[in-house]
Image (cartoon, rainbow, N blue to C red):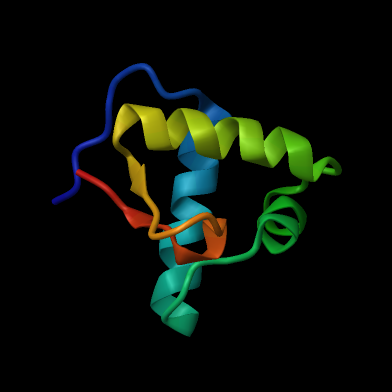
Length: 74
């Protein structure tokens, strides 16, 4: 079972759930634009802000520079 840090926002939890479902369905992570659309956000920059926080907290890990290479962390 994946444990999440207690300090994640509701939006970040929503993003993590979306990423988890996306990976289960497609085998890879969504692009920033796909993720923004899936969670109802208009600005890809806002999604990147949340993704960066999730990465710093250890909830997400990515290979390389692309967010579509992300996977769930601890």
